[in-house]
Amino acid sequence: MSRRKNAKQQEALTMLIFGGTGDLTHRKLLPALYHLMAEDRLPQDVRIIAIGRRKKDDAGYRGEAEVAIAQHSRTGVDGKQMARFLERLFYYQMEFIKEPDSYRGLWEFLDREEEAADTVRLFFLAVAPEHFGPVVTQLHEHGLAEYGNPRHRVMIEKPFGSDLDSARELNRTISQALLERQVYRIDHYLGKEMIRNILAIRFGNSLFEPLWNHHHIDNIQITSTETLGVEGRGAYYEQAGILKDMLQNHLMQMLALITMEPPVDLAPESVRDEKVKALRSLRLFDQESACQHIVLGQYGPGEEMPGYRQEEEISPDSRVPTYIALEAHVDNFRWGGVPIYIRSGKRLDRRRTQIVVEFKRLPGVNSFDTFRDLPPNLLVIEVQPAEGMYFQINAKRPGNDFIMERVELNYSQRNQYQGNVPEAYEQLILEAFHGNSSLFTRWDELEYSWRFTQSIEGTCQEQVAAFPNYASGSRGPEAADQMLSRAGRQWWEIELPCQNGHCPAD
Image (spheres, rainbow, N blue to C red):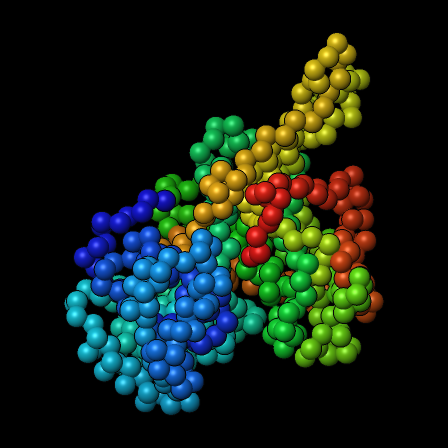
């Protein structure tokens, strides 16, 4: 992506963060904004307003921000750049939930502070999901975010609704206040470099796109696993579980990008149109046959770690799944008959987000004894922790004997760029400022993702009754391995090297 440094220098930006005292703001947003400003990605006329209900002043909040940025920066902190950033950072106290009239004061504050007529207002809602609708409504009613004004944009964190009906209701509320092009629904995975690289790998290489179909691909595997548990988010996780926390958003977006048809161009709406077509083609599950292709799990105690039911704010008899593995199908001409295996879970043996494309073996390979047991060609796109791409082929080992061995063509993005790769929220904030919606989720994408997710809910009650069914620190339920072995396949466990043997935390 180009720096686009000069094109926007004359434009002004006011970024307002609702939930300015929260964890997301301190861990992700403030460091991201610091880096964008330090690298001159933002205009000279920029102000960042953290909005919270706690009583603070600018000086106190700036002190907290300085500590947070130093702790979470990806490159360390430069004193001059930090001072410049803090000069543009302000704290505004208001009761934005219980006192709607407080928005009038915010309007007056912005009317005094904003000098440029073409100022872009970027609202970031880092608040609880139940507040999304009310905050957007008040922004509209008090003239802070004008309906149809292309300079007024709202960034909304996940989850967008708790089910299909609530998502539709939230969308109706927001649509009364803003046009679709003013709404930037965040899935932070779309800001990760290797997720963005999927389109480059597919459509920028003549090697892959002609083979990207059921004639040449045996199966696709999408994996996103964590070693952590719920980490103090017990109340949220009891409502969300693995389906709403991971499957409905992150995993569906990866599936859409890896299976979509080539767009007419790389404009945001062209890309999102093709993603919607892929999601619409997903085969829904029914109650009778679902459990042949779905494995649900919940972690129990193991390796001196508590089970899910022993975590804070978790019901002692909770039946919320913390693991899912499933076989999905995109029923269209390109992917007919190709299984797409998806798995995600907490408290597993390793942290990894990757996509593995397994190519079919040549039909005549068994005619050669030397080639008979060769492993398949694999393309691996690793999103985290190593960030890179791996391509596995077969070649002859040096020597007089004709012995075949696996050859690994490995691209480590973190090694090549010395770890200096922008974080996801840097990309998302910058693209929202530029009005580029390609890294954000359109409403119809969400609608079809929710439809697929809801076809799973309430299934596999025999599995749920057996919770917990895998130990903390393990690979997950054995039934997930059995699901693939019944089809003569296996889960691929590919390790990409991290820089200097160290993989960063997400």
